[in-house]
Structure formats: structure tokens, C-alpha cells
Length: 452
Image 1 (cartoon, one colour):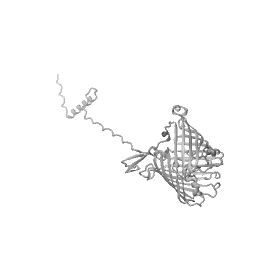
Image 2: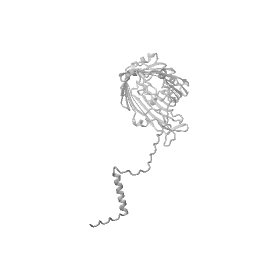
Image 3: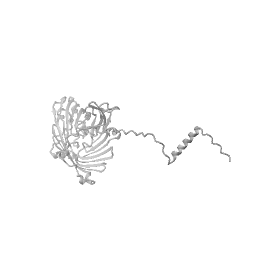
Image 4: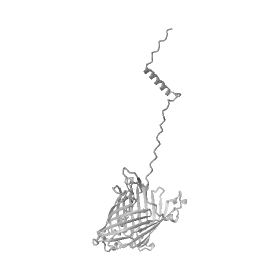
């Protein structure tokens, strides 16, 4: 037999290829030993999350009557005191000082938790409120102004301002309240107006001069239906018996001075807290601490903080009223958040009203607006700077010979805690009295607000 020919010698590249094939075969075999592993590199530990910036907010204050008296949770008892001393060093018929004070005690009763849990009782509430006034309510008339310079300028005595029963739905989509109640603060006013002192700027400016209209502290038998079809939309429908306003005012012995009323008045109001107005207001204010003060936070900030908002959100509002007389009118307002180069948070607002029946409405035209800013002073981030302007036109029928009266108000609210604030203010009354015979009136006041 012939011998097999010798195998050709393997070249270096062939040996390398054979070695690579053997390694691949070993890697694909389940019984193959794994290749020696290299040194294991541990992943770096995760960085701890940055601590949340501290929150600057109002101090709790002195507590409430409910806490002080140890009342149960189903009973709310609140006491508010609002004092407004004022003087007019320039202009007016006379130069003098005045003091007026309002004290309000409000009680809300709900079913006890044990009886209300999961039952009908939790949907019901009873409301009772009494307001007392002492001081000088006629200061504006003596110095020559037609409209009150102080929001609490009402006849001295006690007023029953609310005695009603309320029923709410479980989901909060509607509520109905009936009994003795008023239009303020739910109808024809916006939260931003509550920061002002002059009565033409502070709440329900369109209606406060109409006789017998149930504007605080005036109350009347009536009902208020509140509908909330969406989280941002609120509809309010209300009716009041004007014929009973004087009788209700005299229940606690107050000489209200209201003329005899007649008939009913009906209101419809649409309020819209537009999401596009309130999108950036869902969180506290982002600020930066520099030295001993705060400023709006920019791109670079070494000491970030958050500041509690003290201003209401953006709001659009339209309303109409119609009643016996006839007495009809429209009202509209807008509160808009704006960015300004000073301070921390800002709102501008505007409101206008038109009364169609000048024989029944002594002030059928109104236009007003203003600016409220938070944190203008770096060391006082919770204080408010307040500026407002308003012009009220008088009826040529019920107020013959009068044209208009205007006001410019500048104030600064010092917020000490949730129980106490102090607000110095300056007012310039334009065309006091509306007849052009009284010099321009300059008044300085101080509002003291307490809540318990």
C-alpha cells in the first residue's frame, strides 16, 4: 500500500484562523468554560436628590375661636375686626378725622362626623352671621364726598347679615343656599377688589348705592344656586326679595335708613378661572435669596427659596341683574397675572358696569381698575402694594346736577401673620360730590384687620 502524502505545512494565518474557530465553538457550547473575566467596575452611587427649597409663608397667627374654645370640627366660629381711621389734611369742605369699625361674627354648623359619615348629613350646613358697626359712618358726606371713603362706613348698630341653610352635592358640582343672605361677596365682585379701602374699589362697586339691594351688611330673603359644570367655570343664579330688606335690617334694632323696597331682583353671573391665566400659578413663587432680601429667581441662583402666593388667580367675569323698577344692568371684570421687572407676583384688573334704568339706579356707570403687587420690597416678600383708580357716574334723573366722582387709591398692606395685617393708604378724590363745587380731597387712612 502506498504511503499517504504528507500534509502541507500550516502557515501562520491558517493557525490563527483555526484558533479563532475553536474559540467560537467553545463560546457556543453550554459546557464550555467561560473566558476569564476582566476586573469588575462598580457603577458610581446615585447622587442624592437636591433638597427642596425652603418655603416662605405667613406665620400661623394667634389661632381661631374654634381652637381657643375647643369647639368640635363640625362647628366653625370666626371673628373678624376691621377698623379704618381716616383724616383729610387737604381739600374738602372741612378738615377732620374719623373712625369706623366693623366686627363680624360668623357661625357654620354641620352634622357631627359620626352621624354624617357616608350619609345625607355631610351635605348640609347652616350659616349665621352678625355684623356690628361703631364709629362715624357719615365722614364722607361731611367732608364733601358723595361716595364713602371707607368700605365699612355703614349705620351704627347690629345687622343680621346671614341666616341660611345650604345643601351641596357630593362632587361639588352644585350647591343651593336659601334663607336670609346677601350678594356680597359671591356676586358682582372679584377677590382682588377686597384689598382696597374706598367703597368704589372694594367689592360690588356697581351696586352699593342702589337702595335695598342686599349688599353687605344688607340681607334679604332669597336663594343662591351655584353650578360648576367644569373645574374652571362657575355659574351663580340668585333672587332676593327687596321688599323685606328694611325689615331684616331692623331685626337687631338698627336704624338702617333704607327706604321701603318692593319687588324682587335677580342676578346671573358667569366666572371663568381660565387655565391659560393660571397655568404658572399652581406652584409657589420661585425666588432667590440675596443678602437679607428676596428677588425673582433668574437662571443663576445660589440660595433658591419658594414664596407663598398672597394674590388670587386670574379670573374673567360677566354678570347681569334685573329687578322691579325696572332696574337692569350689566357688569364685567378681568383679573390677569402679569410679569413686571420688580417684585415677585402681580395682578392687573379692570371692571366696568352699566345700568340701563337711571331713574332707579343713582350710579348707572362705573369703570375701575388697578394693580396689586406682592414682594415689592425685597425684605418683605409677603406684603402687597396696591394701586387703584375708579370713576363713578351719577344718574341725571335721581341725582340731577351731579356728573361724576373719581378716586385714586395707593396702599401698602403689611402682612404680619394669618391673624393680623396693617394697611396704610392714601386717597385722592376727584370732583368730590360730583357737582364741581368741592376742592379735590386728599385723605390718609390706616386699615387694621384682625381675624380669630
